[in-house]
Image (cartoon, rainbow, N blue to C red; front, side):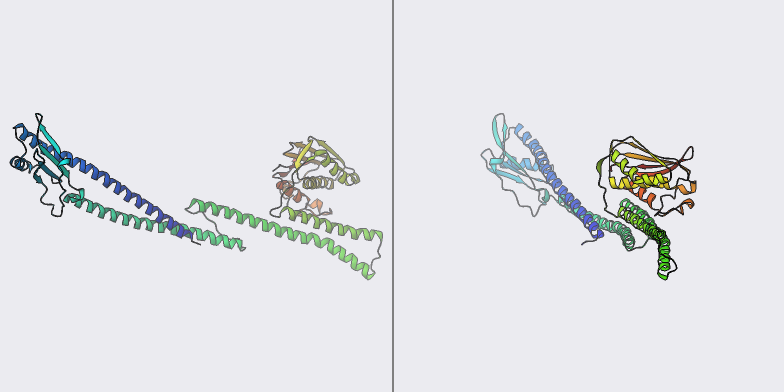
Length: 443
């Protein structure tokens, strides 16, 4: 497995290699085009110079022979460029004279061919033939010097650009990998249980995003762990009371201090019921907090939801002289019915238990089938300092300290709402009324 730095350096090297190959290809194509242009230009220029003297000779009635051809080349010698061979033929096709730059010691002469020579006519009469052959581009001295210097400069440029690019890539990758290693170390420590890691912004946008996400994750883990610790401590505290009471009673019955009576038995069963309620609610809360747990969304009747909750709480409401009134603005809804029923039942039960006077608990169902909401309204007022704490696990107001229950009902209801991509809010209304609003979303 290669490191990120090795991958970056390999990528830089590949880019440099491709860049240099393209430069070499461009140079080769440019050389080919320049050579072709060179040959055409040399042939045209040489032809123009030679034909100027040949035309003058023919105007004087001359014909190409040994004497005239020598005279023509001698006259043109000072004007001929150094990059072409010139061959002159008699009208019969005999090679009379040729000219090549004498400074080209290592140049192999091209064989003359009268068949490829240009016929010279004057007044309809054949006066001879001329053949002009451009020299190879590389045989011209200043061309060779130019090519050699270009190759040297090009090679030096390739070496310098490759070296500087690799050096720059090394520096950039060093900075990037240093930041990446720092982030990786912090993430490993975070996974190992550390919660004091620093995830700061970096010069690399992607790493800054990762660090920001990791910092948010660390805060969430700290919050979740604090919540679990608080929940565990609260559970231990709430379990201790019924367990102590139950233990005291059982010791008293064992030692003969108390006699078993129906009232005593009911008291024992009451304490056991509290323990069962705590255990059941903590199991539900644990399932809601379990990662990967999913909702079972189904279409159901709002009337069946109403009937189930009303039947479940009818006896409790009647025992306290409280009436339940349900106004239904929904025919059906999409939700996880068991969880929704559990959350709504907890809200209505909480309203009944905390009412100090007889009255009415109103339940209003509205919204849409995909996004229903329920309002539970009861007489009373909640102090402002308690509003933001009501949904904390096992939190109880002073007035509810003597109520028998787990203290997890509202916490579970909010988690069920959040599980549905919804919310649970509480507010004090006018005329001394409290309203809990449970909003769900099909998700």
